[in-house]
Image (cartoon, rainbow, N blue to C red; front, side, top):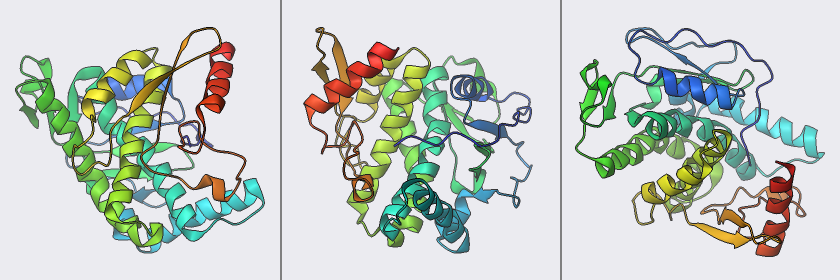
Length: 291
């Protein structure tokens, strides 16, 4: 599954002066125009109403989550002519929020070695416009980073410590959402964190390919999620297949399942464990040839 492109594309608001993540977010949008990020100042409220929903509202699991999932249920019925199970709809709704939300943290780390902390009360989402509004009040960086003197900066000693900051920041943001979505997903904690693992890996892997840095993204993700890094289930788990011309094709097996096969059994994700390597080689080779 991939994050749907926006229906309406509006220019992002200017970033606050001295933002440590503005350049990374700008590069993200330049590579993937379906996601626009508006940064808010330290005391500026996030937008609400008119299509906006706060991450904290989704985590609360009430009416805002009902409305969010109603969009996914209607989309499945419209596009595939059949209704999806409620737990499958919940999985789609979680993915369509978590995929871009993880990029808010992983892309600044990947591009700038800066890791913003984004509790759920500092992010709002407008799915039909492909926009996220964020308020970055704290971030981690390495010693010697020019941003280390900015308000909210916190230095950590080395790359592994920074990777731990990424894992912690994503867990801080997604943890409440996994709890809020939990009763709708009908999956236990381990299965929910498997979904989170996939959102982290597949989002940055995709952005890395758009930025022309897929190989580096794969290497970085292997170090970020080597397996056994609680609460994440599994790891990046990349592996290499050989194409018909001897070329190397990168794939992985998802830690979790989106259950899309319950809607269209003939269609599976390329990284789905149900997709055999022969089919993966065929699909990946076709993409390589098209490029």
